[in-house]
Length: 179
Image 1 (cartoon, rainbow, N blue to C red):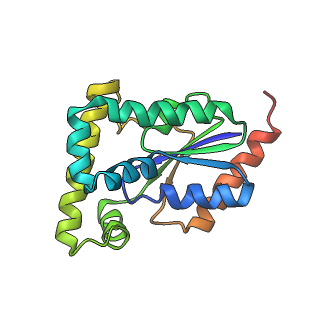
Image 2 (cartoon, rainbow, N blue to C red):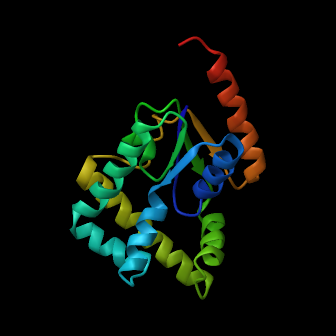
């Protein structure tokens, strides 16, 4: 089973992907973790590295191509990342996690240890603008087009365990349905 989990920053994609990976024993490949690692290796913030990625399409292509390659080599894998649902059309289940901006900013404030909520809001909005522009330019993808996703779930409303239960129900039905 191949599963993709996508969503905007702070929507909980990594948390859900880790949860499902542990529960099912699936391999996990996270585009966001790769991007964060690359920024950290260069001693840059996500915003700084995002600005470089805006000028150098090779960075996004490297991350996306690597995730796709790994995802297609394994049968039981979860690919987590903003574009995973677009980059791995062969996935059996494509999930988009939604959460309102205020909720995501609160999560990012804690996760990224940002000094205050205004700064978290500013950096989140800038990151989203930067990424949306890169996706349009590099891939002709409108990140707001959710039509390719099988499930769109509100991660503000449901805990990670509850989201996992919803996904498990979908997986159960997918496994039972004829090919």
